[in-house]
Amino acid sequence: MQISDPLLTKKEAAEILKISVPTLYRRVADGTLPKPLKIGALSKWPLSDIVGLIENAKAARQGDRS
Image 1: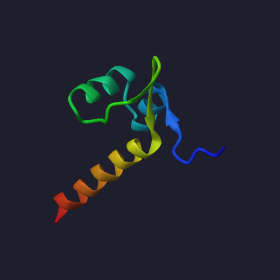
Image 2: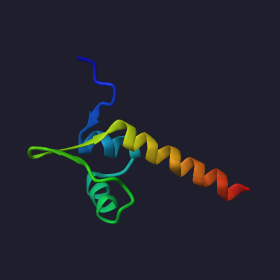
Image 3: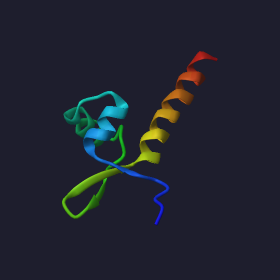
């Protein structure tokens, strides 16, 4: 079975975003970041959610320049 959208741990998601794990959860609480998928007691973020967040921020930045 091939997984096309890997799930990231809190540490992996925070590392990609260059933020701390507590900041990751603060951003989830304030709605800046999407809520994680809950698998039992685990919290996982799809890589596509994190990449999409970065792409949206880049697009917004480009829009501010025009």
